[in-house]
Length: 495
Image 1 (tube, rainbow, N blue to C red):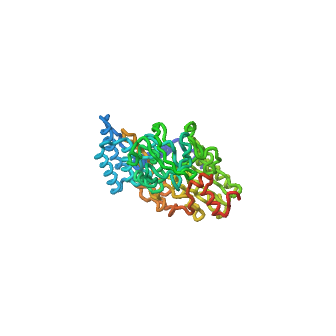
Image 2 (image 1 turned 90 degrees about the vertical axis):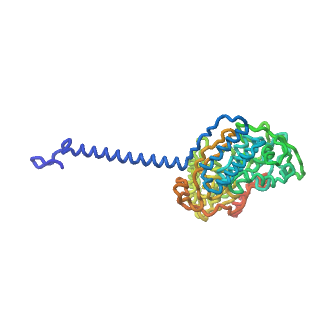
Image 3 (image 1 turned 180 degrees about the vertical axis):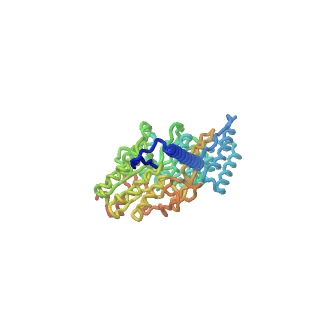
């Protein structure tokens, strides 16, 4: 209380009236310390739980120097068996048993083992997880195995030569119909067992198996690990058989794949020795500006917005979120009649597209349709992005193209490297489930930061309009998916 003076007025509170100020100060400090300590403990507990659940920490491959190549293989296989202790997709007992049985069968059959055979043996074992993320990468493998002087594009209607060394430029545009006398479709089927996940994703990588004589030999298809005889149908219709010698691997560089092959150019480092089927031609919109990770084009004649996102992540210091905000601002000013989001070459990354997916329906004219373009190269976070565009756009959204590269329920997140000590084969450890359809509800098994954590998503991402990338359209410079969009709108490319 404030003291009352003799004249009846209130006086000033003494510096420490009845010790109250000191008491309050001490109490505040104590409360502050208790709150801060409690928050710190909670933060440490959450961080510890986060790390344990979502960032697996495999043990070091602590082996001595192998006495010979066979011992090197045994060490790698011994370490490989431990992959099941950390990989979430192998928590399923039947998958884990199949994986360990496959590893044991390789251990028992090391007689005459070659590096290429070992590559396939490891790939087959890991494929038992049947999870598209959990594979011995066929892309990084290209650093360790040889390859033919041709490159094949990810086209839906066959294996066509899109790039070739200058010596074999006459093969550009040719379709492979046989490998060592065996139908190419049969050879593709033989390699599907070395990759887990849905069929469309396994077939997407088939060209990387077909173009390595070392892998063809390891599979028992070719007699030599250094060359292969292929049968082609040339663009003019003639049939040609040619034996092609292998190019040694380059450990500092992987081979291109997917969009990198069908871009209208060979990689810059290959310009002296390689040529491209479409060299000198003007690319259609979906393949234009190949150096750009993101592309926005307002289709003025059709009154639509086209947004191409090839990476669901920041690239070279460029913020995808900031770029999408700029796109959103332009779309808001224009109120286009429709929008197209092209995710066909997007291999994933982060959830950086979430905000744009949520706001896009508001940027398009009322009831205006939204088309999401997908393919087997649409993977991981890009699959979730496609789902979010469909979720927030509702019935206004149509999926166009071909099937995305994964199922709606899969194991992802984490991606800690698990490197076999001698062969250098790198696996990734994935730690949590994603469930885009039903939502993932378990606090231990599911990724807390996922947009579909305890939140149901979409029933399906099957294409509403089937428009895969086929050779005839590709070589004619046409985008069948965008043409299908315009046709659905009753428009044409020139309208």
